[in-house]
Length: 221
Image (cartoon, rainbow, N blue to C red; front, side):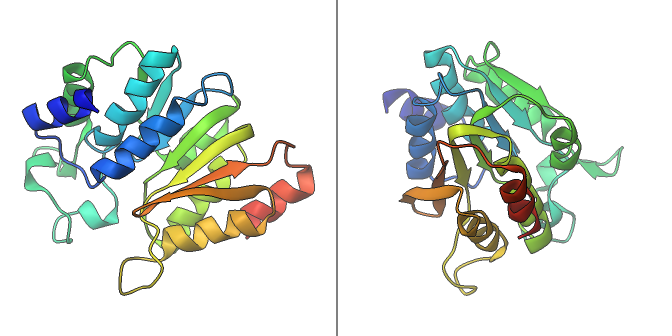
């Protein structure tokens, strides 16, 4: 897509999403405007929000971008993916929110992207709006990935899409937290795998809603 090629060529946006994965998110997000809004977990500096937000802008939908912007475990000082440019020395914390806001402004997406500066757990607690698409790219530990994927899976409308990043078949290729979480929702019987692009998996929720037992089983899996 010309917009994305031009935008990312002109602007250095930090992030770990491959272009082919981003384009897949964009294409799927274009299809859910009549199902419900989009939501992402783990916005970081806004790379994925550009793809999702652009689709929302074109379809008069909304993207809720959830991130506490303090970094996941792998972003902390001394860890593999720590970025000193995003470290607030005065607060002694990571802070990717200024970079995120800059990305959204540069992309012209302020009219359709709603930043939610909070943890996934807190945002999930009272979330009531059925969602058309959820993109999960938050904490990658088994516990955090399981909580994100199984928790937000229950917030999708019937027919909604659950997109999970960093799915790797073997431990040698990458951490297994997201893959195990994906398998948990597939095992619930309420989701079907509909697309794979690099490390991105896209699942669709059954056209029938969870009943109470299914939802509980999915969360416990």
